[in-house]
Amino acid sequence: MADVELSVEAGTATVLINRPDALNALSGPVMDELDRAVTQLEGNSEIRGAIVTGSGRAFVAGADIEEISRLDPESGLAFARRGQGIFSRIEKLDKPVIAAVNGFALGGGCELAMACHIRIASTKAKFGQPEVKLGILPGFGGTQRLPRLVGRGVATQILLSGAMIPAEEALRIGLVNEVVAPDELDGRARAVLQEILANGPHALKACLAAIHDGLASTQDAGLEIEAKLFSATCGTDEMREGTRAFLEKRSPKF
Image (cartoon, rainbow, N blue to C red; front, side, top):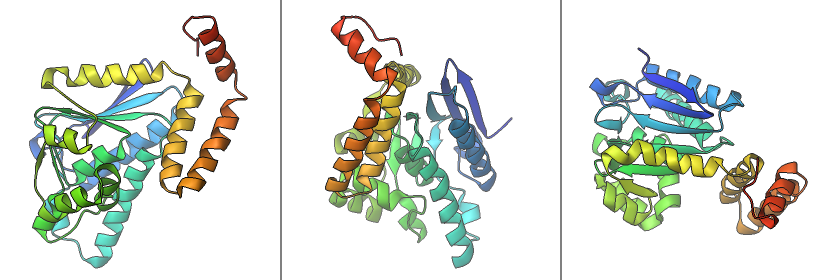
């Protein structure tokens, strides 16, 4: 059985981190499999969106500490850059990715959830970046994505304390979008994704690009990015169908 399982049904992919005995820790082999799964998400045009989740009690409880303990500065740099690269590819996907956080999302698990576009958490979920307790800092994007999501002050406290954050607190600070009962998590994540996928596919891609590229720019530059993407959507059959459907008071057929 693979440690990362990818299944596709009706245009929706599910990426399951399936190493429950190790709380789905991101070992080297797991990262290899996750890398391949992301390649499939990138290359399969029939996949319109994806849900990332974990099996058992954890979403992902972190990286493999035994592997980390053997790192030196040179291998540590390669380790961080590899994880950052995979997670950045998730963030840059032109199709929506929802993290369905079922349990512990710590260290690399919290970083994986933050690389997804939307986060829906179970009431049992717990988040955190406890790397400082190991004498290191987050290496897969935690110091960069967390401040952008929750603000500098809150992120600094989380990063420097290594404290664990319950789901309701994660919702309050803006780390997650919703919190639901454990037995409702999968259904809610799929409902949100289907609501999104009912919209124009080119418009969804343009929105994701505008958000990602705009956040990496100044506001003025971001506005120019938005204007050019808006202009491009105005030339699509999708735009003509969407506006016509609105005026005719019917659902669009994208």
